[in-house]
Amino acid sequence: MQALGLSLRDNISPAPKFLSNATPQSLTSWPSTQNPSKLVLGPSLTCRFYKSLVWMNQKPGWSYCRTLRVRCSHNGQNDDGFYMRRCVELARKAVGFTSPNPMVGCVIVKDGEVVGEGFHPKAGQPHAEVFALRDAADLAKNATAYVSLEPCNHYGRTPPCTEALIKAKVKKVVVGMVDPNPIVASKGLDRLRDAGIEVVVGVEEELCKSLLETYIHRMLTGKPFLALRYSLSASGQLLDLLGDRAVHGGGYYSRLLQEYDAVVLSSSLFSGNFSMPSSQEPGANQPIRIIIQRNPSSSSQVPFVINEVTGKEIIFTDNSTVIATEMTQQGVESVAVDQVNLDVVLDYCYKQGLCSVLLDMRGNFSEFEDLIKEGIEKKYINKFVVEILPVWNGSVKTESLIPLKSLEQAVKVVNLQCKESNQSVVIEGYFK
Image (cartoon, rainbow, N blue to C red; front, side, top):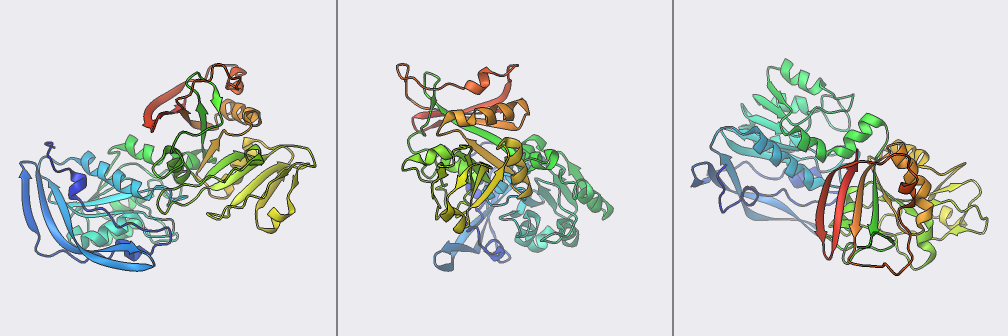
């Protein structure tokens, strides 16, 4: 597509913002379009403007305002990748809301024009295809539906999306990737083909897989996706610090907490005036806090640290550790085992339906030594996030990555990405 001053993101109206308890009507209240105005921006891009109602979330209730929606058509040769990338962009609007369901986006295209869009906002609510078909209304007939993940073909908390597509009489469905869920895998594609709908699979597949890395990992391995986070000084030493504004809205740490279902913390963090970490992203679902307490001393008790943001905390202890009575009375769950290790923690999280866990290496680093070594040797740790702070502490005695020194073989990492976070540098990568 020819580069223009007006970007596609600006031209396609965003879906309304919603809270985690929002009703599906907040995404389906757009009336059918009438009398669109047409604007030709160049040889390959045409936009049509529509007046419509968009619901806006304004506490304490819902209100609406008139707004202008813009739909852009891609007038050149059909570009399936272009529309699939838009599906992924839509799906990302629900980061932190859909687990254990996958994030999915859908775009309906007719005669080279986007006539409907939608994404899956939350587990239990309609899927992306339903919202996109509602947005397209009668224009969905003989259109092409682009969806980042194979449409489901079974009854769960919502009806099958395949039946919605068939009922809407779309003529073609382009799918980013096959669903690894054995309940779904290829059954949705077969149902569409049996109904006479043309099906194309594998468009922007790697991008779609990247979007759903935690969902895919849980489906294929039976364990949650595990990421390790830690901080380093510029001289390569471990720091028990987070960078400036990392915990504020938009900061990398705040976004991590929004993205992951649970965060594992050391009980040593609570020796001072430590407050439970929480995401500051607007409307974010807070992760479950899993506190590791492995001190066998009977006098050692995890402090009472109920967090008002979520109230969901789990303490993993060995059988000899004493848990404060007031914590159990307040509903803080405790899990006592013979030995606290990653096998125990990850199996528990899987049974709770969690897709992703963040191991946050702060506090007493020695408490993480066994966990990290186990995680790398058994290939449980999939990803790492390291923040390099603008601090040089060569004269101060600090700890290094002791567990990594004792590994028998070097660990290769791939797909390194680097980004700025205020004055810090954040590096993300994957263990091969």
